Image (cartoon, rainbow, N blue to C red):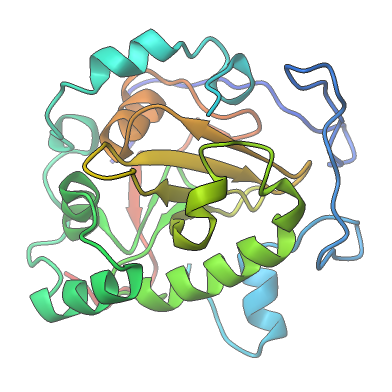
Length: 253
């Protein structure tokens, strides 16, 4: 299934593929980190880390930095939409949802129930790739979801520790952030930010090239609607790829 139009994005990298430092809203240059860099001075991709470990990988401050002209009001209006992923991705590609035991094990590790729209997305389209690069793990997929969450949370805490206090929304939830998707073009990680009390879950993006974190208003439905329905992508994410593809060799049907 291919996207019905070509999306465009503004790259943050020079012609050699190296990140270009840009000013953040406070006027400071993008920060850097010394945690686990590869030979190019960049944080390693998930595939690089898996290979290094001898394992194989099968394939808040809303601002203009992440999505160009993304405005808080746009996402606040989207908050009231239902999670109709079929309008963006077509009919569900996975005909059997993940087992209830799998979700229970994951939510026991998370420490609370995950948002329903996220679980709906995984049940229908997990173990797949959005726009050619955004990997969406599934509990019974090639890169099993709970293993993915554990490994990516550990890596995130090690690599972004110096950014913990940069956003007041993240600090109290630092140990509870839940990785849910991984972008293999540049190694960015999507995380779920638990609410305080009965509030709404949010989505955070951890940028690998020039390490920083952004917390976006709205949850998974709003995020998927923004990148697929409106074609507004985080800087550096290619958009001219199929909206959904199955990971090669997926055990799911």
